[in-house]
Length: 310
Image (cartoon, rainbow, N blue to C red; front, side, top):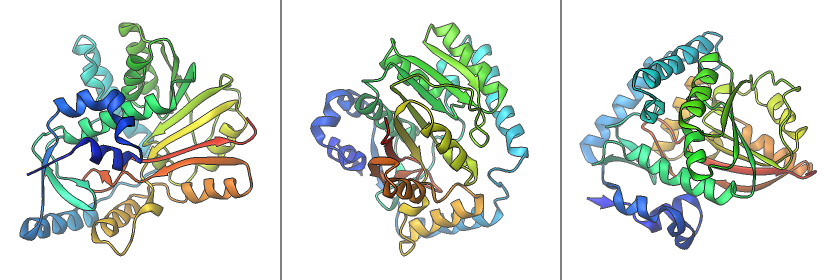
């Protein structure tokens, strides 16, 4: 049996142990981060199952019907939130699945804690928000879903003005109800990242972030980046699957490439930002593969940049 240490988290996030210790040590020490590496015949069986599930998968990202799927999905979270007397646990997205083998450091692992992925992400998110958002009074999440991440940000920074933007009405209603019933400074707004509303103006010296929403644009991200570049935003943070960070000569990476390609998740986002950097339009501050993810892909890679004209 293995156990994640503060050293493992620091290596994954691309920082120092002291930087992690400042605000995440309590969680790391209190949560069960034990796991075993899946190997031998069990690994063979798991890989075969992954291949079969990839071959059978019919979901296509960016298809028109996906808007209805997301509206229905966030609507289910909204219904659960209201019927549970506004329990914040109802905001946990259903795609973070408990009791699953997951990826870590190019291995498939079996956690002893059924919520290992969620708990790991919670540590990462706490560190990320502390590290990068402390200096900004206004923060925007694009593709905010249930408002799950905005709640964590509001709990960490109760005085900040937070905005949740999504392209389906059920998300906007849910985020506004979260803000109202828990007295968080969070407001929801309808916004389509593929066809951005230029009249929606962001505040000066603000920050924005996405977590798993660029992936859903099916490669149609250029209009959104152009919109951000025209806004007075000082910092942009993305936590996204990034196909360019995989190594196709490593089996677990090849399977993730195969899965992301079949689904149609966004690619070329990082090369696009690098081209903008070469043109001196943006400055990329950090690119870090966490070597951590769910069964089929690594969805928590970190890309941080800023416009150079701000």
